[in-house]
Image 1 (cartoon, rainbow, N blue to C red):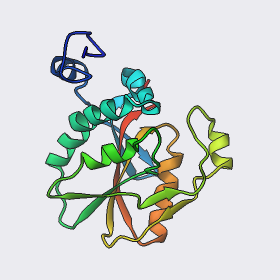
Image 2 (cartoon, rainbow, N blue to C red):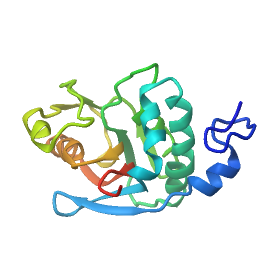
Image 3 (cartoon, one colour):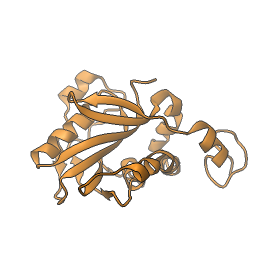
Image 4 (tube, rainbow, N blue to C red):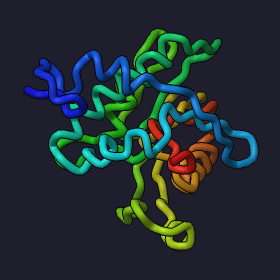
Length: 191
């Protein structure tokens, strides 16, 4: 197959040379709820076309590459004294896979234990391309399924207004869980 970025022949959808040259993550920091840090690995504009593949079968492969380049490396360096779980925000399966589950899986390490389908939005409204006002009027209504660990890392692909992550944090807090930080692939505030 050909690399999507440079069109050279490759065994992967994005060749190693392009991964090294074009997909090296930076860490962007933003806060929600006044104190909770959201780390993003890319500016939205830098990987926008790759992010849009989540709506296609190709997205599985692209999200796996991005997860391995960014999330897996983060997990290698993360340390905490207590057991920590990572939860993908609304791991709803579309197109045969859940993109947040792919990102979540890459966090597996001796310090982080991914859990799946533990944070599910009851509302199926999509926030993609919607205004802040729309998001306020259509809350996600997250349901938290039981798990024993107290400390959580939240995982999503994009942070735009922070509304989804804020609602997820609130739902987890009601269940006695503490979100340590949030991780996203891209920050839409940084175009």
